[in-house]
Image (cartoon, rainbow, N blue to C red; front, side):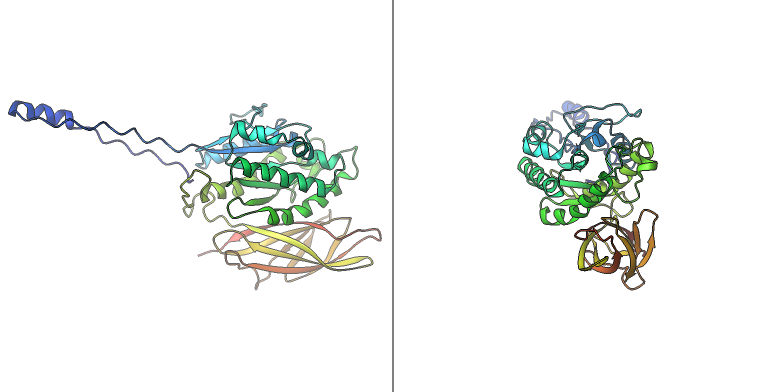
Length: 373
């Protein structure tokens, strides 16, 4: 779908006036055939925000996202869910499927999602789910298995379901010292899971909600977003969701985005991490950056957040800066920044680890810049 445009004004009928003029001359008009029913507008695209309290209690990033979509012309949409709005102080479509306290593993194990899908019939699912599982020390393997089960159920509901899945925002509650690292460990696994799960007909797109999000500045309790956090979450969902709306969703004729419209030609990239080799106190890693948009990009910036307290110390095929929390930012070099649609490049790095570090892993993400004409 594209942004909505003004409706064309109808042409006024003239047959009645013509008949009045012809009757005195003894002429008559043949009866008109029954008018065809007026064409109805396509149904709005139905978008389900799915998750736990970060999505639904009150989940005010949904209000921010809804109003940004509306203000930039994406008005033919409908947020859906079996739960209603829970405040937020601004008008928005508050329907959602964000159940406070819910674990994604419980939703999968208890088969709760199919009834919710049947009641709301979404075309797109926007999912930030797993915070309570991380808090409960559920393993990444079990969480990702639950993700797979939910995607299977989404596709049973609609074979061409589009799914946006978040790398979770950071968490650092006072009563869970291990939670911060557990989120990093899960997030590092999500891109690989998404690549294995995605299909051409039902793509699974990863949205990096972790990078640049601060539990100190963007939450009120180390877990749940405040107004600043809501704005950051909405800003990350927006380009990914706009790109789906522009590309065409189930039931939409597939209207490609025009240049200059929101999401039309929006640059996008994906990242994948692998450990190349390990040794006592360190390892060598490699990150692949892929242009996932339909237009060339002229540059990219990747983030690498190693798990287990590791720190990136050296990078090649990129330019390194490191934040105080250990997150590494890597910018492209002059020779590997331009990527055609679908093209990839790699950069490598060395990281130091503690003596007790386990298998190397890292949460990675990227942003892309559009090519200039």
